Length: 522
Ligand code: XUL
Image (cartoon, rainbow, N blue to C red; front, side):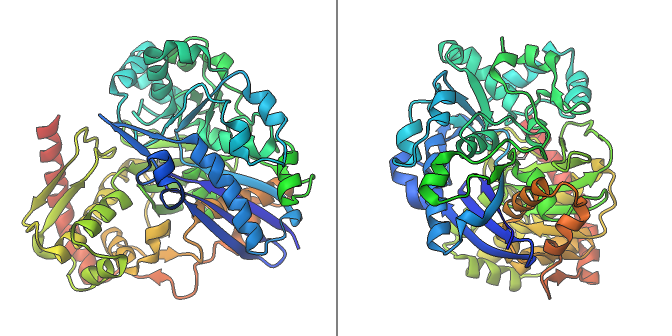
């Protein structure tokens, strides 16, 4: 039995997924929902604290507590944790965790006698951590771009224009607004490297997959770019650990987990990566040309590409793949499940009722359309929340349900053009991929089959596969992913030719509506 654990620390939950590579099977999955366990104690809603004015932070101590809960759940589920050979993980991208000078010593001295939270509560130089939903750093984005010599310079150096949610602009804002606390900061982690550091009992560097979501990494050398660091905040280089290859072990697990959960002291910890880069692996996208959609708190559409291609209009992102060879082109929509949940709640539905609404309505929605900007949107760039309805009655629950999903699918088609990857099939993951009605709309809008997998936790599966590859680097990537990334039987949704035609006619109208709204808001 060869067991590997993947941990996904996402916006609303922390998930653990264990694979057995001899049996070629997922043998356990457990998830800790943050609101369910910690909403009251940490003032959370949808996993985060919304401070208003676009400031959205996570609570690092929630992630610390959730990690202990996760191990307890896996143990209670009967997983023999002592047989896990390696762990890798995935974190919500871009979020930054600020640690003080005590962090290193505390992490190295963790004792299995006390819960993690009791031991690490004093290692932070900032109590909360800005996360990807934060839209408050437009000023810093423009400043960083200007400091490196212009938007084009930053784009060609790092693969991305400055985005509000990216780590660099968030770090700059912290330095500007809280210079004393910045001074007290010894090490800035990403969510991914922070969780890896807890597991390894030492500060674990950032991998290039997540490093490329910072506006600080040279996308070609996969190392920090000094020009970008200098453009962001003083002495930033001293506060970052060097970028490390995703496939290179960060050492063995902390004695804390050996003492408390009977892990084996030879269990290796791989650097964690971002959730999207891990989903790339978890959906089997290790060869160029493959496309996937992840339906999470936000939705993303991404592709594996051979060489860096940048999004000139600044909508898309370019990341390094954690296979340490390829690249990942991505677009991120903030209003994913956030918008689906807002519609579900507005009409007092549950997910079953939501699915029924999709069934009882028709492709094209009789011309009813919605711009679902329940929160400010990343793609297209819409700085102010506001839902727009066209030919759509606000009190018609079914039509609004269809409108929100059709909008998301059409937007994903319109804004993926820059990737220059022909979309001939889509692999889908994330919680909402369990809803077949949603998959049908994506199949019809994109005019191609959509396939779903056994697990909806593509990021956690990708992390587990990365753990197994780290332990067996001699096995080529396609052989690592192949047994775990076959579509679950019966879960290929085929496009309906009549609906494909309907959407082909509707997409230009949707695009025009989007553009009109964007013009009025900017
Ligand atoms: C990607 C992005 C989101 C987060 C969600 O750029 O911001 O998909 O990674 O966890």
